[in-house]
Each structure stands twice: as structure tokens, then as C-alpha cells.
Length: 206
Length: 169
Image 1 (spheres, rainbow over the protein chains, first blue to last red):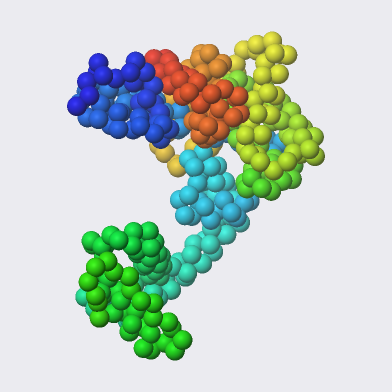
Image 2 (cartoon, rainbow over the protein chains, first blue to last red; image 1 turned 30 degrees about the vertical axis):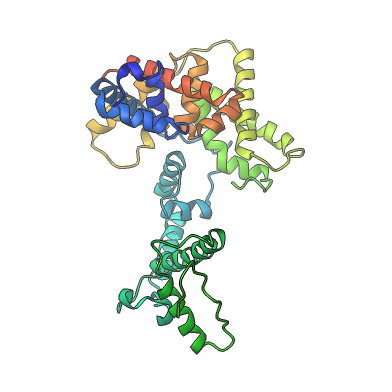
């Protein structure tokens, strides 16, 4: 456990950077470990946090219309809808929405479109891609299917890379037999699908 | 705004005008100064866009803004700050009670007043971070100082501000 004496003089400054997510590599652990055991720094951190919150609560003033056209930005609206705007941008769009019926209507339409896209049914992958023990009967949401597909591709890629990179190292946690069986099964139903001989270290496999 | 596209002057005015105005107002506490700065920045942007090559657009824009601000500080004598404009009151959008409105306005006035007491170097970094929403790296790029200096100025600025405000908020 780090003590106050172990900390650099600028620990206070690190707390501000920590609050802003601006610590350099290696500093995060220093700060979190220190915060774990130093009530003074916890107090200082909360005060810094309150100060920042106060600053960020300042209203965004409207510039004179003669200087700045008050815009309607659909890209901003989509990011607003998805919660992807930084705080200051969010406040600008939020303020604008209070006074602009056109943008409120646009936001409503974008929300409806997003809901429609997200309600698309998920599709189960072909059975030969699913391990028997993990097959599920329900329909997966589209997002989950996409994530699962990416994860599956990544897993296969990692497997191939791992096997090629370390041909003499037996995989520990990956069930190669199961993978090879599914691979062979796919070859039996898909004309033209080539069976690639599995690479194993030591011993033979069916 | 994407870094590989050259925006039009109107895009810049629409997307950044309000931020530039708020940056200027929070630094000066003066609406006229803020309006002048927006005008000056947009003028410089209009001229500069002809020779602008795609890159870090925000870095380019905030360097212009900051230079325009420093030029205006050098030229103008310090003017007394004006009270908060009516805008501060009407942009409270969530229909709070009259007491809450009053408390918010007082808080805004207190913070603005405290901000104006910070040294300009600190105030500039704090405003770019907490009002404009730039990252430390973007601020370093705009102000042309190392990121470590940005970090130090933001920290010291907020800490001074904390000392100037009445706690708890």
C-alpha cells in the first residue's frame, strides 16, 4: 500500500487529471492505490469534483443571431440520441431542442428509425457453427448476434494465429477436437468447402 | 467535424460560433467583448480557410480563437465587467422553481465572478476544458504549451476557484 510519503508532490495535480480521465500510463494505479488509503486525498478529490461540476453547470449562453446562425444539425441529433455527445455539445443540442420544433420532430423520427432498426429479429447462426452444449432456442437480439459473430471470427483468427505461431505448443484452453469436428461437419454439407488438416502437437487425432 | 474535410465558413459559424462566444464571455465577463471576438474569429477563419489544409481542424480553430482573444486583450484597456446577461436566466431550460432559478443564477454569477479573478493563463485552460470541452491535448495544441503545463494550470485554476467559492455549493 502506498503511503503519502511514497507519492510525488504533485499528487493533488494527479487527482485533477484522474477526474478528467487524463492520467498518463502508469499513473492510474498510483492514484487508485493511494486513494484507497488516504482520506485526505479522498476529500480533496471530492472537492475537485464539486468544483468541476460547478464550472460545467454554467449555462451555455446564446450568441447574438446576427453573428451566429442557430443551426439544425442532424448529425448532432443522432449523436445526441445515442448519448455520444461530449457534455458541452450535449448542452448546446439540448438547449436548441427546447426552442426548435423542427429539430424536435427530426429527433422523434430518428428515434423511431433507430427503434425500428434495433427491433430487427436476431438470427441464429447455422447449427454447425454452434457447439452442441451452447445451442440456444431463443432468438438473439441483432446486436448480440453481431457481437457473437465478431467474437467467433476473432476466436477462430486467434486460434489460427496461435496454431501457426506456436506450432509446437499444445493449446491449453481451446477444444481443438470440437473445432475440427465442426469443420469436418461443415465440409460434409457445403460443396467446395475444403477440409484443412488440423495441426496438433504430438499424438494423432481422428 | 471530420478532420479530413474543409468546412465552409457557414459551417464553422454554425457549429462553433456559440462555443467561441461562450469561451470569450467566460474569459472576459463582457458580452460586447464576446461578440467582438466571435466576429474577429469568424473573419480570420474566413480568410484562413483559403489556405487551410485538412488536419486538426479544432486545433487550428482554437489557436485562431486564442490568438484573437490575446490580441484583443493587448489592444483594449481592461473594461469593467458587466452583470450576467438575461441569456443566463432564460437558458435555464428545465422549469425549476423560482428559488432554484435564483440559486442557479447566483451560483452562475459567483462562478463567473470567481473565474474572472483567476490569472489569465489558468482561466484560459479551465474555460477551454470545462466550458468548451477540449481535452488536455487539444488545449495544449491550441495554447501551444506542453500537456503537463495544461494539466498543472487546470488543476491550479480549479483549486483557486474552489477557494474563491463559498462551500458547500
